[in-house]
Length: 496
Image (tube, rainbow, N blue to C red; front, side, top):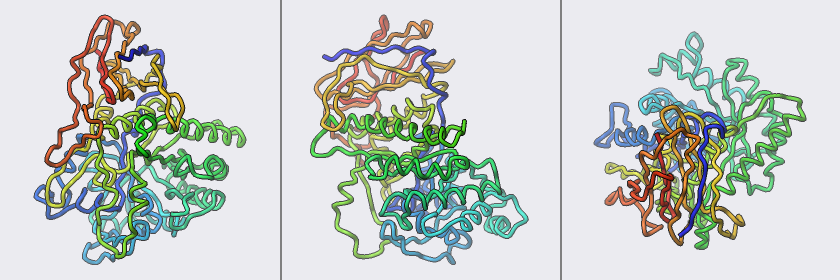
């Protein structure tokens, strides 16, 4: 059996927990919108056509923000197509996902759904095929109270009150050659800066996100961020990061350590941003919006046969997650929390059906994927301040990331209690974790749950939706505090 230990101390404060860490992403891609959040003929649908079962699961998931409408989709999107009488809305070809977009759902419907789900909308702008004027039009339509052509049009379309969208993404993945309207870093940086300045003339208090690299493996990584921030440093608040991970060639050990790459990504972008800040002599800090992250078996999509037609809401990117996926996912979530001093917003991509924690059947059932549970538990229990946790742990060698510890962990602390989130990456046995709680003034373990299964590739399905779900961990000692972490497991230990 492996043994590890760690210390919980309120003095090891990183930053306050940011609720925006628990954001997600809804793109007009596959079945995320249509038969995902929106399905008027579904038995649970409300008067606006939104699936009640998905709304309920979204609330249970603990989502704080939702980024919309893309993603690659946004770089060819005309936002005006999605407003006004539905019967008069045009159908368009979506080049990003080779689909037909009906525009039954647009900005007004999305914001209405957000209000019902209790989440903050986060809007992405098309800086691929469009630019400053269209961004200003959407801002005026969405946020201006009344008395102008576009704000009055919004009211006429049924939304009298402004949508009050505070956070805006200046395009999406503009470093990617796959992106409609792909640009060089200098071209994009200039356009993003000009758009940001114009938007701030309307509302100086907006929070704006510049596009960073779509992957740390991009050949322009680092240089892209530096150039973009040279142009935008004074007018944006965030630089974005996007990262996806999958198990390749049966290398489970490297996959479970994917968070090591995310840690590298974050530290590299922070260093680059601070270097640019020093060069431009600014005391301002640029934070990170990690507004796309997940486990995604991208290689399956890349190896699939290209479509020959233009279907409406075809099933795309519908990965069905197993236990190992959930543990790797939990490790990524721990890394985001560990970096809460600079990662103050994040968006799990995506919410429903498309590489998502929630799956649905058209006209039928909805259920929780394995990845649902780490996200929901972290959103529910992470409160107060993030505490730095440095486990003293055995390590193992990985093909991709070298030597990594078996235990990856973070904690949060408030007056109400302390919560430790930990993954055991070991595939060859349980791990006994000793927790030094002396600095907590007598707090004891009041609950410990674990997400595990003898089969690391076990999945949840519509017929067996709770195969993988958090269970009470019975292997707990109190003096000293000790918990037995099963192999390949996500664990939540609460103290009060």
